[in-house]
Length: 343
Image (tube, helix red, strand yellow):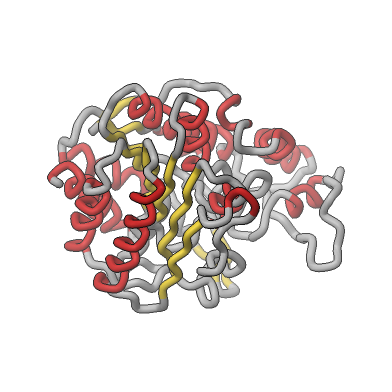
């Protein structure tokens, strides 16, 4: 299995994040991808490749052009205003406020194009996320060209980013960009299977009214877990997309038995959908020692996830999402890929 990687992700390094009322070191940090890269290289799954440059057209097939332009220039504007550090929002449109006009001020646009304070725009964010999209597209193109599977080692992650807003450490939605690229290059149906601990709210919102992309997510119940405002079981799509969005919210302390049962239910729905390709939003923050998650999967369970994905018997694009227990993230990602290769 080929892995696509670039050191450009190192350009995105937040100074910190607000967590439970305190400014703390960021959980989404460069070491995450470096530990995964090292583990994949040690496992010798296959070559480590640099991404191709696909330009912005595939990104703009998913994301709003104004939002993309904002991402490109926001930090330069922040600096031009004489502000130090990372660009972060100070206000968001609440209930009863208008959000149908894009503010002219940078502070207004930071709120308009985001939904949390934990996703700062740093001097190197655009370069990192632009390259991350190219990493996802390169892995996707390899599969579209005939590879059985490929692994896109993207950082920062992407599944919380929607068409025109960022959040949850995510800026461009790599899984959605991959799925749309597959549709544009001959795949009649694509499934996205999100196994990250947190609900892929951005991916859901992008495809919510479509019947050509099935979105399945297993995640912590949004009644208690981030992102809180999407991810409930009754959210099943709308219009043409009704029935093509499947959420499996699970409670604190979920163990392998309950998690794997949810996976099997999602897999059955995926088989009925009969996609040409599956895109896996691969988060390993379901690990029992993850600092910002509450499931109880152990390292020994991650090869079993890989085997279940392999049993879908489809061309597969793995796209890296979350996982914040940095010491174990590499081993857990490698375990998924090892299980897939051995399945």
